[in-house]
Image 1 (cartoon, rainbow, N blue to C red):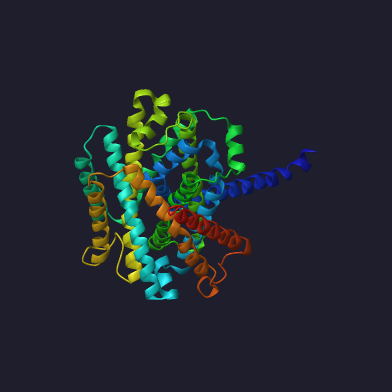
Image 2 (cartoon, rainbow, N blue to C red):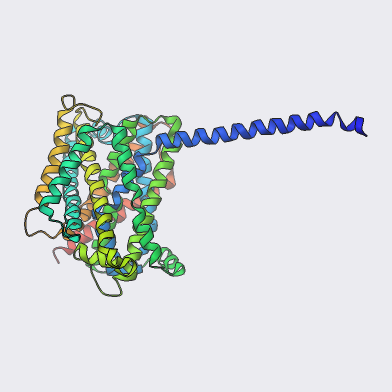
Length: 434
């Protein structure tokens, strides 16, 4: 028996050795994939995290305060739409190696592109003002003078991009995105009933009122802002992501979309559980901060102020950058933080000017920071379906995208979104005159 058994031992050892090698290869392959994902990570999570900026925070706080759990159902279609819009922009950047505004110019001509860029510039500038309004509101919460804090922050934002290259700036943005965990903690501490949350998410509830239409439109505008598609596609091109890494880049987009909307959901739930029962509508940052008072006690105002400041500064860095990228790309000008001022003067002029003017207008007396922020998100929501039409035409052009065009179901959902947002925008505009 021993003689018969001996020949099998080397075979068994060889089998174990082969399996060990396969396991090692598998581990190495896993590490390699994680390394590629880490290298590709950035454009999606950075762009999408800006959706939870001062505008997002104000909009989500007011939505939860006004309508409680009745507004939660909108986050399911919001998340799907956000993923699809950003994935299309991401895919176009990877496949073509060209930015969205450049593609629009080549496909639709200079005149159409010019008018679209002017509309985008107007909308983006209002949103940049909203970011500095968030900085001012966070300063007020801790008793700091906005007249001092806002100019200092504006100078810091300008210095960040003027002094550092793209990789350094991207790392700063990724670190800033991490601090959104503040709102996840707040959402956990209010201890919502999971069953009630699930019901509110899955069962749509429409309230026929001007305030409800306004909030829904603002939610779309802050979650899927038009500039985000332009900036993500430009970031993908700037980073030089290849078609071979398209799956990793898509994962970056999906992860970013789910993460930021989960954070937003936590903000709405927190305010729905604390402010809504008390009938507080959130007309200023102080009222929004009271949502955390039962959870954090005396630290509530400081915690909210930190979250608002981080979100505002984060977006105040990214949004002017996105605006400069988009406009310069559309006009065919040199662009990019890796360029020197002499190589891309228009890019740096647009970046610096939008920050200085945004900070200046916020400091003018007699302005409501929260109202300024909400209106900017509504305007974003009105522009979104127009930009989405351009994206759909481009991404479905097989001459440009080859085999990477949309599927039928994908297009059906996108067209439905355009129709819904158009009806919503018209309804809101009509309501202004009634």
